[in-house]
Image (tube, rainbow, N blue to C red; front, side, top):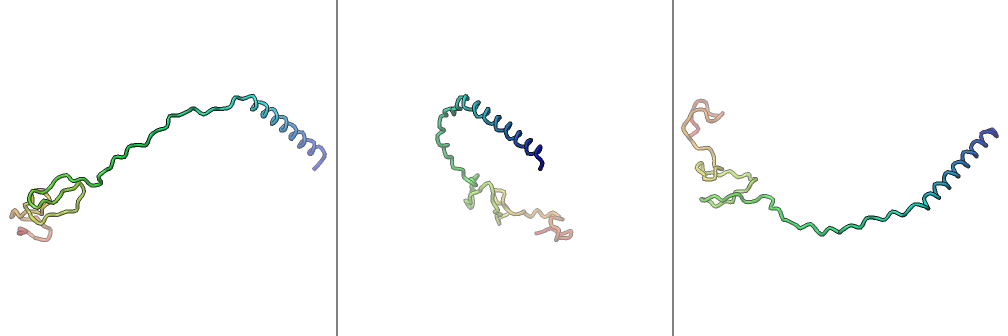
Length: 103
């Protein structure tokens, strides 16, 4: 490095030092920031949620019907509508039967 490069670096450092001193003086004159007082929020009331509530109850077998179920009644005439298919004697109800009724 030459003498002129070093002089340039020293001049830049001196300018930076002066700017920093000026900034610090400005900060001393600033009013301190006071946080706004806040009203504390109380606890949020807990409301329990039933994960799968009972919707109805079967009048025959008294099974509780929930919103989400994997229940299938073995009676074809189940009053809940969850029963199996009823045999109507019509042709072509099943892919297994070929032109014959299921029951």
